[in-house]
Image 1: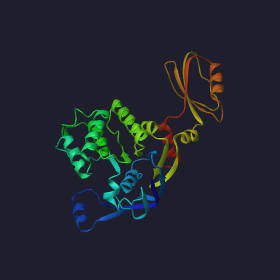
Image 2: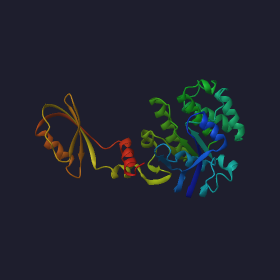
Image 3: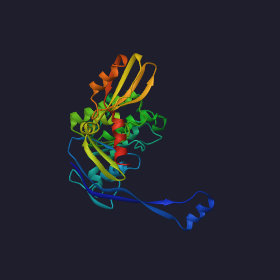
Length: 324
């Protein structure tokens, strides 16, 4: 069980203008500004739950992950993870969590990946039998057999991220914090990683908190979404609730052979090219079937499809709604 109550965190950031004169001036007098990364953050996550933690750059996602993992100490508020305060009981706390930061590495840069795994085995005091079993399982599931003997600096970003995920799971953590885990992965690797995380949650009831800008990750892995903006939790709900909240607009794609479009209330022509047209339908003004019937009176329709808003469009609409 993860629970945050009224967590606040402020950073002091140094500022100066460009140029040598300003640099010398900053040696004597440095100007600072206060940036409040987290403002009264409160939420809870049940054991075995998978939660998508989304928001624009600088919203406070990584700061929240760092508080929950014990890297940051908040200015005020409480954070309890499985009965422990992360920054007060760090050694005990980290034994039950795995953390993957897409922009940070826990692998030693100049040594083969397997050497980093061996080091992590010693750090976490993993029994030899459990370590061997986990390495074999993770190597197979994440296709690492060709990578283990390669130094981390010689891996592509996608290859390194697969190794990072494996490294975070060597000690069988009950909680997994994933900060941009699929960054740099190709389509095949992304699908493999998503399947792996989902299987881990299903089979071992691993709690997963996922931050990402890839909404396909959110759709594939999570049902619950936390939206953060300007350091505040703005929305807490399921992906299906989010879709219902923004279900007013439907996208209609039409292929046609002859005819011209006439203006129709509640129907907006978005694009038209080479016998194809895309419309947005306001279903509170006119139903989808009614819009199709009205359009069919003036054109010869050969094919059509109706879509709801994509996950990316839903999130963009949220950003606009909350002005973040």
